[in-house]
Length: 287
Image 1 (cartoon, rainbow, N blue to C red):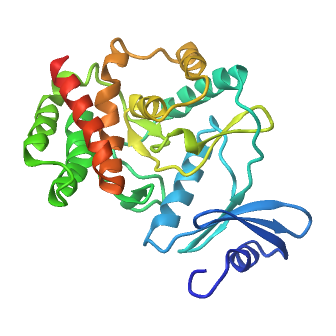
Image 2 (cartoon, helix red, strand yellow):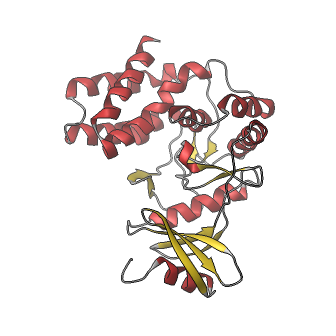
């Protein structure tokens, strides 16, 4: 319930359809059946700008004509209604196709590193954590200032990361121009591409949900797929490389790109992820 309104009532109001049933899925997510048999997913979020950011991200990804995302059926400031994706088992064939689609999405580009989707707010979210979309001219400096250091400072302020540990991560940021690899143009990123946001559809295609979309480095999406596990990841990478080869040395930079989502998890979930963040930071410096 948000402001006294249920997910079902919000779905009916935003779609103009009669509601015939609803079933809680997880947290603030509800499956709602509409008159005529259509199933939709309804998400409620009271965080300012969160629904606007997600809806804009879904539309921006869809506009690329590359990956599959659920259609937005309605939204306001607190409710988002999208089509339900019927899921099936992962397959190697779907993974190869997904890799090609993801490469095409990244190649569709973005105006700048950190640029939000059209119509999306500057103050967005990655999961439950605030994430600012502030454009920058070059990836190493933007990544340090907008994706690594804000979460590091917050983790230090709460005592989750020790000041001596923070120094190691700050050294990584200072060396980013040398560690970042060949310069690349801004890619159109999903932005929160962990396995839970990758749905293996019953139609044999992969569908992406819950984006934190922005302009960024394409290796960041791929690093997040590896960080939290993705079925048939070798096949995904094969498909990706068939369309657009990755830059030389990309595998050595995976930890560098994982530093951002790891620090987000430190802020959200605590010390367990701090150890992992420190491990990838030390490995980046050693390399």
